[in-house]
Structure formats: C-alpha cells, structure tokens
Length: 174
Figure (tube, rainbow, N blue to C red):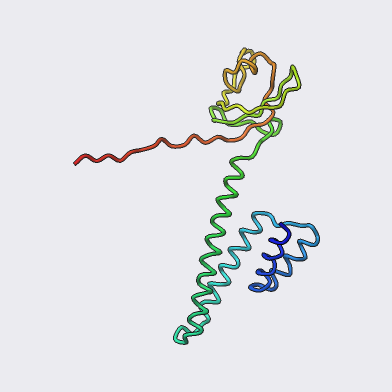
C-alpha cells in the first residue's frame, strides 16, 4: 500500500509539483484529505488545465498537441470530480445513524441494527419501515417485529434504504 502511495505521490509531483509536495507533507504528518477537499482539488485542476489549454497556439503542431493533452487532463479531472461526488452521495446514504441522534421520517424504508436486551448475541440487521406509534401502542415504531414488540431487543441505529424503481419493459407491438 505504501509503495502505491509513493508511486501516486511521484506522479503527482511530476505533473503538479506544488500539489505533490503538499501531499507529501500531509502524508508525513499523518493527515489525509477529506472527500470534499479531493473533489475541490480535482475541480481546481480541471479549471487550471482548461485555462492552460487556451494559452497555446493551435497552428503550431507541438503546442496543439500539448493543448490536447491539457484538454484531456481537464476532462479526466472533471470526470473524477463527478465520480467522487457520486461516492460521497453513496457514503451518505449508507452510513449508520444512531437513534439517539435522529430518527427516520415516518414511513421511511430503513435498515436497522438491533441489539438484544436479553442475552449477549451479536447485533443483527433487519429491513423495515419506520412507523411512529402512539405511546400506548403495543407495537414498536420499527414495524411489527416480535422481538421489538416484546422488548427483547432495541434498535440502536438505522440507515436509509432506497427501494429501487420497478423494472420496465418497453414492448411496442408492431
């Protein structure tokens, strides 16, 4: 893993000396970039490459070639930024939220981590719908699950669970 990181840092120094040096300093300090910082960095490089492209004389074959490389650099970094934004969105959708911090919206499909209150078994995950109940209801807010209704376990955390759109066929009879 360290060899791969050193290779990446070497490549970064070759193409972007200042970025590479800053990366090495952060690595030595044991710091890491946040996903938002990496997204911003990729967008900044894309903007820089795009700006650099405009400075070349397109009638000169060499400068035209370099401008094309800068243009590709810009496109690649914009694509990288988009992929990182998708990754960030997926991470946010699949992170556990303790019930002590926040509860889901009513009728939201969720995955729940359940913790046994009667023995020391491992925690487990269930899929359910969050349905807030009146305080005098014998049912759990987390669906009609016998162990929850009996008080033998409790929900300690939850995460969003998106229900996919149904498969659609486009049959057009001729």
